[in-house]
Length: 489
Image (cartoon, rainbow, N blue to C red; front, side):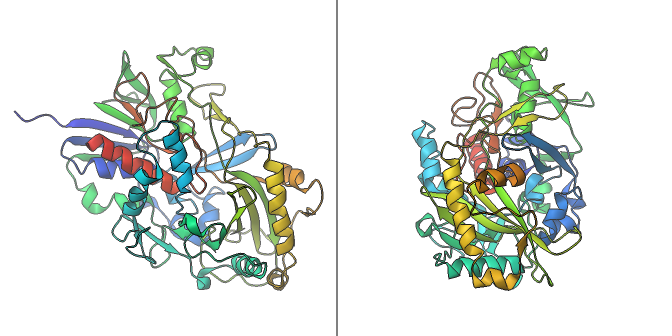
């Protein structure tokens, strides 16, 4: 007798959800329904597909959810795309893995299968590296095309930053994903094709061949109101329209801000907070209580003259050290939309190791967007930022900076005693790397199954128990690849 395929409903067609749908539907054991609140990737326009126009997406020219995360030291708006492919359709495409020590730290927490030795091959298998090809650290046959921006694609701000940091003696790094070369100065790898066009996880994984599979259904424009539970087992989801979709297993992949909201609306979360909103806790778990993010000041500059170069915002990068490898510095052009006046860029400094006590909560109503508080800064944060500011002061004295003719838009004397505090209060920026709101170890087991609820998993940035030392986008791909493999096994 033929066994009925297991029906899996994936909630969220973002960075991770597209990977899950593609990988699970490879197996005839599953029928897969992928639900996305936004539109299909056929709606991508030139703003989304052209990397140098990426900042336009962040000021309202793309379907998005905006959330203001509440400080101290300041409130910070954060953008998340609402379209198939999720934020991989509108991010800076910085394709970094983090450091081996990050994942070894997960394993040391008792999370078997997440050490660097376990995940390295997954990172390699996901990529088709157009620069390094098949090599000990890179792959040549994965879904995601990866290459580094060339100098001819850099903006003037990037060139001034790279050349100035070289004047200061920063060592060149050919491969930012090779931890043995760090700290140093290099160029972000990006998920772009040979023509410098964006490749989201939707475009990479949900190809026409994949979409033609009889066991895969992709539904866009679907707003999921809640999970349905039978006792302590997930049985499906209910949409805002009232439609119910039954499932043998549900995988939530709505991202670190929206996944906890869906779980809490369904009775999975901190019992006291749920009770405040009239929701009975089916599973009393610390959902939404341990958010981390990469935060830092982003000092705005402007300069005269034309703006050559076609590359996106994530290009020239200095991975620095004040306390191990723990600081990202990069120039971030924002010249692609009309601000008036002269071309601009941000000189951004982010701490790679940060606190994990940010929260995601209901606001006035569980049906509204999240209320988010930022994680507190580590005790030594000001000293680490001070180290970074000293580097920027030195950069502003280089010949490369002088040739650019740049000057701060909102002047802060970076050498002043209160410069760090001024920078944080006036120019705080989130790297949009929110993680850890439904982490393995407290909310989930090492297979990303929700404690105490059968038939329910989470697979997105919220599962990360600590934040990686690098951009989190590729980490979400890795997590989705590994959870799909675990389910198939």
